[in-house]
Length: 187
Length: 101
Image (cartoon, rainbow over all chains, first blue to last red; front, side):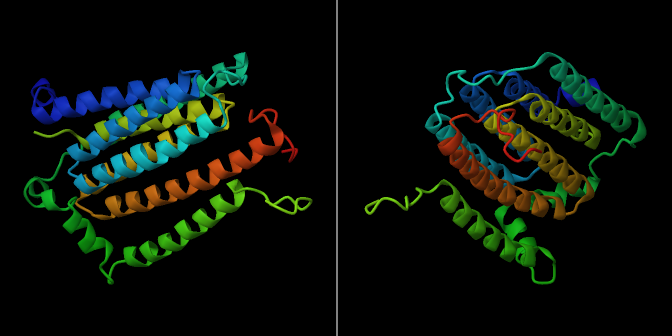
């Protein structure tokens, strides 16, 4: 990527959100307090949503903010506060050797894959026609036309996703719900 | 002039590696869950980037399903966590060795 491309609007947008995503992702991994790690993850999810916008995935950027940064993170924070893990009352931190092994393996993995991506892959640029026609592919209309098309495989998977969510709801209620004590007469 | 696809892939790999580091070093199951979310997001990013650069809508479709599965996974996982905490009073994954795994 040339300097000119970096200094263009798109390049600056990518740079900003990429740096924010990496920094907040690092904070998720290193912060001791679960509450702060969760809030860093919110920043990370917002940054990734911004990157979705730079890829013209408007609908998914919105869903990312609403579902991930909204619903899922509220669930995380709710459980952290419910289990009173805000203080570092757990011995959650690092244990010497394992930390070194884990971080060196992760850095090695990232470095190796980065080397492969930078040297082994051809420099794929956006096709010229995608600039013109691809702009509506990420909108609600574009997503819906593909997702609900009976000739494509996504509709079947979509229907079964509803079943998956039903199972998840029932499972969560059964697992986390109040146990009926057999000895008690009144709950 | 646009950003080459490789930059998105490398960013996705970095985020995925951070997730791996979190899963392997953290002992608090909630933080392990968060690291898994980090990894899922990295994969979503690469899926959308591939879909955009190949002109294929499949990347965004797969991302929708990954999000739905992640939501289901988190709700069930946190339910299990609450059930464990109710009986054990401690959710350190090094202490939870009841299955002798």
